[in-house]
Image 1 (spheres, rainbow, N blue to C red):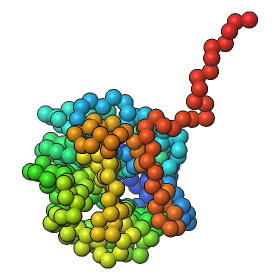
Image 2: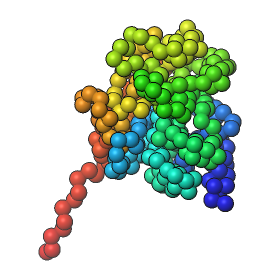
Image 3: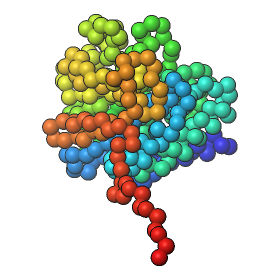
Length: 300
């Protein structure tokens, strides 16, 4: 009954998001119907959070980041995945981990969307739980003439460098091509994934086979921004004419990459008439209108 309730709640919520995506609401994701919102706003802002888990226990950093995001009031929040630890031995244990993260994200005052990371769908138990209770692993929506595509490329633990950039199967690649073709007139497209398909450790000039197919699928235009996580190291790369970002972490621990590329942050993106403006904000770097604890009143 508990699983049904979760599924029912998310289904109702996704339909609610179709009508009122800016309303204060709980975590939502994976509507069976693509969301399209037209508010006539050329400029809007949204936040991206990176890996909450991986490398050790999470210590409240993710929750602190969401507090700051609430202060800034974006239109919505997106996660690049790895929300739970995922080292589970039962569906009940998996449910407990998702309940834990939803208790944290429920305090957001705006919609929350995410793509699954390897910790979220890294084994049969977590994959089955995700599919049964959280819906589609890949989806899209349109917000003010801006297309948001969520890909799922973290299902498998792959050998060598392939585990850095993941794998997109043929069915999903076909869906991606179809989605882009059906929305070719949008002003900009953000593609969100967990593993950075564009990133090649050691030699960034040698693309992997999946990237070659992926870039061809996007077509000749360059009005795309790619966003990923997974490696807990921050990179901004321009690959085949596209701006590609690998975020560091929002709670996850350092995984051995260069020290200067690891920090706790979230990304702030303002979509303008000329394209996206991107800023990175370190966790605990935002304060409300009264950041100083008032001194205790002295007795008279």
